[in-house]
Amino acid sequence: MTNPGAAPPCGAALCPGTGKRQVQTTRGIEMRVSISANGERGRIEYDEYTRQVMVTFPDRATEKRIQEYLTTERAYLMPESHVLDDYREEKAIPTQSGMHMERALCTLFSRTGVAVDWNDRSE
Image 1 (cartoon, rainbow, N blue to C red):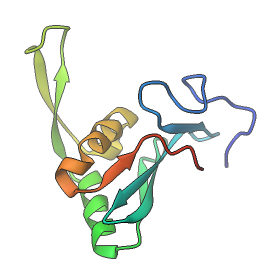
Image 2: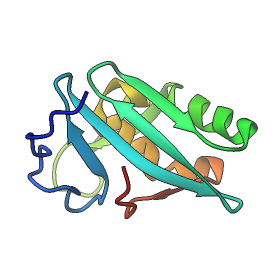
Image 3: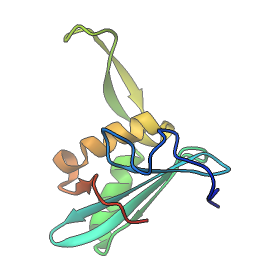
Image 4: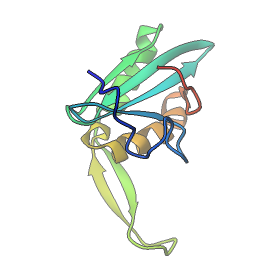
């Protein structure tokens, strides 16, 4: 259930820099992005409070591939400072946090061939 009076945490309908829609709910942050592949469109919804991701896509094989990608542990390179080669490796499942989900969505196309439309403003 969305709280209609609450502003997104970044203070805008679409968060600057990412273009993704974030909705503040009574439970937590929900992230919704549109996706596309092979002329078909779908949607990914992520609830940071429950750590659940829901993928909707017309092609069931592609939907399963996306779901698997977003729920499988992977290594992330996390910056330690502003120096280019100063980072640490961290293993996490993308649903673990909003930050990990954003990073996984940024590499979704290179790993699955499914593009994230960061500019889609539809609910």
